[in-house]
Amino acid sequence: MNNNTSSSSKSMVPGAKQALNTLKQETASELGITNYQNMDKGTLTSRQNGYVGGYMTKKLVQYAEEQMKNQMPQQ
Image (tube, rainbow, N blue to C red; front, side, top):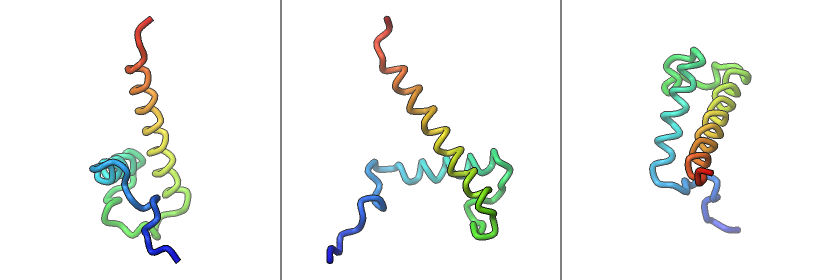
């Protein structure tokens, strides 16, 4: 059996984990979930936890689209 840690648990970009945690806190705050970092996530409904992840993904996609648009040569 392979004892290596799964690649999905390792960050591919240094500092990305902290940036994602910050984004998670900001997103939860925008959704009205206060003190998200220190709370027991088991006290939230699946819907509430899903909203945080879903809105994070939406923001990340928007950010990537903006970055791609800015990298395209002007025509």
